[in-house]
Image: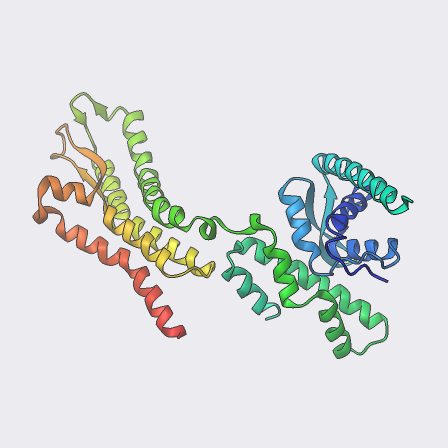
Length: 109
Length: 232
């Protein structure tokens, strides 16, 4: 069941996008499907709303894009840059720290 | 046109046209993928299109995602006073220098310029006259039209392009090339503000040129007002 609270998910799609794009270049639709399938549908970014996030990441230099035709379909593919790799490392660190303290609080007796 | 309402909303909220175009292009491509997915799941074309559009998100959701990023707003929307009040005279001056710079460079490099002034051959005088005509009758109207189109593309209030046109009209750049008879040294090539020339020489020597320039510069303003009247 997808998480309804957008506040709880703040920053999560961005982190996942960066991680996915670290492995390979992808286009928007592919990114949304990959996040949905890898999280078992728990995290499903809005189909159309991923683009402003991708464009913002590209504007800050974390991603680069290029138009590429594959199997006769032309799409914009995104890939991680050096700055994006650093951002991913930083966000991952923050996420792990946050996750660890939230777990502590939740499991405190 | 698909996403026409979304496009209009984003532009009216100040999102730069290049970001709007790109967003809509990628949304259209995403919608094609979603439709194909629905078709592969067994839905007929009409149902597939409806389901795909619903999955893409409502216009409000799609607009909200874009508007959450303030960086996507154009400079014209963020600082209209600077863009339409300060930039027009700078652009007009830059245009003027671009027109005259090749002639000035040419005169310097070919040794026409001496202590006694410019010893200009006929071809240079003709070129200078053409450059001044372009400067006097094309630059200010082109810059005014450019700012009118910029505001129209970005769905800004008419106030801003009218301000730009007013500033350009008040600046009233006048290009001058004056040379003595052939074979004589002397002469000058330059840009001046009509207001300054008026101050120096009085109304009689500059009014014809100033009036013609004013009418040409105001044409985009009439176009804007006509357009506004026609769309009501």
